[in-house]
Amino acid sequence: MKQSFEKCLAIRIEDLSKVYTGANRETVLAVDHLTLSVAPGQVFGFLGTNGAGKTTTIKMLCGLITPTSGRICINGYNVQHEHHQAMCQIGAVLEGTRNVYWRLSAWENLMYFGRLKGRTGRILKSHAERLLRDLELWERRNDAIRTFSRGMQQKVAIACALISDPPIVLLDEPTLGLDIQAAQTVKSWIERLVREERKTVILTTHQLDIAQDLCEHVAIMRKGQLISNQPLSELLHLFQQDCYQIRVRGHLAQPLAHFPPLTTEVEGETTTLSGLFADQDELHSILTALHCWDLPLLSVSKQEPNLEKVFMHVLDNGVAINREEKKREASLISRK
Amino acid sequence: MKRALLAVSNEIRKRLLIMWDYRFNVFTQVVTVSFIFVGASFFIEGGQLDPGPLASMLLGYLVWFYARIIIMNTSSDLMTEAQAGTLEQMYMSSTSTSLLLLGRLIALLISTTMIVLIPATFLALLLGIRIPLRWEGLPVLLITLAGLFGFTLALSGIALVFKQVDALADLVQNALLFLTGTLLPVSRFPVWLADIARILPITQGIIVLRQIMLENTSLTASWSNGSLIWLVVHSAIYVCTGLIIFKWCERMAKQQGSLGHY
Image (cartoon, rainbow over the protein chains, first blue to last red):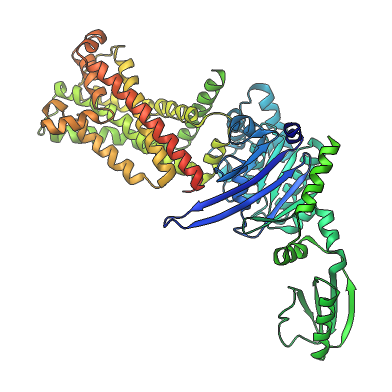
């Protein structure tokens, strides 16, 4: 039963921990008893601030870092004990690296990485041609990667990750350093991968607008721990009641200490404060404070929360996750 | 087997493509091989360039040059790949890393042979050096290179953990030039130095190659006098030790999370 449940999941992470030991024997807990599962055919957003443990987790998924404890299964294959089978299930573009050979052309890179993953012959060539045409790189297939723009290089890296047609794609900061147009192309490509090819995409990014547009499910990490793990719509819905915009006439004489982080915008004589409030009492307290500072209230309105605001709020206050996780697993089992 | 061949041929193809892209560098290396040999011979022979002793020297020198390129390239290639992120992609392939490294070594051997053959032919013609081409030399060279592979596996492993090992690689390849009987036969070394020299990766290979190629000794005779047996044992020890060190270092790098660091 357990095995068949794992096979219906694209990724299953169980009680995963990673402790790094520094040069002077000091230890750093990078990932702390992480448990989560990813259903197939969706974009799963893996979010968190720098040093939250996202990249360590992604690299443990790729078999590049050995976990201190815990277990990772990719499409039912244990990364530690069935490494080769598990690696056949994934393609990855890792953060901050080029991932491809700059001295080789786009075509040569695709041929090399295709063969590295055991693909050969006509199937490999036709797949490479399709990828290059889709990514609008076909005309420049014979040019060396070093002559490409950053966006084009990233497209080739993504194409190389997809050359063996893996069911799961790990993209660690795929839009980092790209201009708006290139980021848009990568974004549409990810959407297409899921919509048309039913691939599972694990996406880590600091660009929360992109995550909001693409992800069906998000997990948020802080200091190695999972602090939120639920469908994006549910997460946004949780905060729907708590997102307000307050407009006052005049300027704030001092910062709003002891209150949740709010976005402040000043336009002429009007100051607009917006953000998430823990409850109605908190909203009331801030309105009282504004009144005490003699700032006439212009309006108070409810807002649709966006991922950026929710993310900041969750990082500060957290969200109970265990109940959600268990509920989701139970629904997956019953679907099976 | 098919998968292994595919992995090896893939590495060879990539190596040759990159080598062609660095063709000016390759040309400079060819000139360097010739230049160092002529200069070293001139000093060792006291200003004479006598083709007789030069044949023995050239043979040793060519084996050392293989070692030099392989030692220097293996660790620096690994670090370049770590920097490029392609090392991590290699580790995510479904083929074993030892097999991929073997493929890379074979690719390196092919490219090095191309670099070595041109100056060897040029030097032989220029200085009138005659080295009889005997097929028996080929298995001896391959066994020697197998030992060298084991040594570079160990060095690659150390590079995975300690990263910048260029200085160590440089030290090793220079030590090999002077301590393995490349320019002067080991028999002319003091006993204590000869004992140290015989432990080094290419020393025994050079001794056996000189016997086979220049003294017309057969493989059977070389086996009977024990020198070929010692070469086989020597290379086998290097391969096994290299593999153990590489696997241990690889495990360490994965535990430290430093596989892709540089």
